[in-house]
Image 1: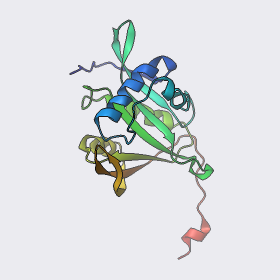
Image 2: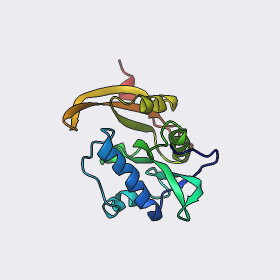
Image 3: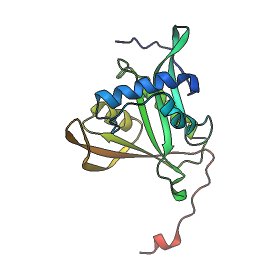
Image 4: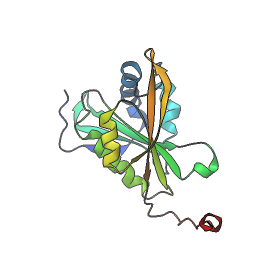
Length: 193
């Protein structure tokens, strides 16, 4: 088991992290039903994913680094992302978030640290809601999301098939308090009852 240092660095993900990020994700593809991808990726295949998360804007990629070194490079312990919720323009103020920790680092505070940093950066963006999809069972992820104020909004039953069985996915929602977003004007037609 990897010992989590008390001081971790969180910063935007860069191309130099791509191999480590791909290795972390491939662990979940190959070993778990927590992602519904069924075929592992090469770092080159993940390049467009990395580039879709710039250092500014609502779609971020943050990595947690062990301040110690391994092969003269910081060791990536996990990452968190905010990605488009849906491609249509009216969804632009909503994001889908996720966090992945390197094998051996789960349950040690890395995901909490990453989400704390991610939600802090999103407070400076025009983002109104965050959504998270959790393949079940996954009690640690449910606890993490609930600790950050997510609430269950619904469950798709047997929505994905992996490893020869069907899996349920629960969707969680969290309001985001943007420091920069304009307030939404109330729709007068919605107040008529």
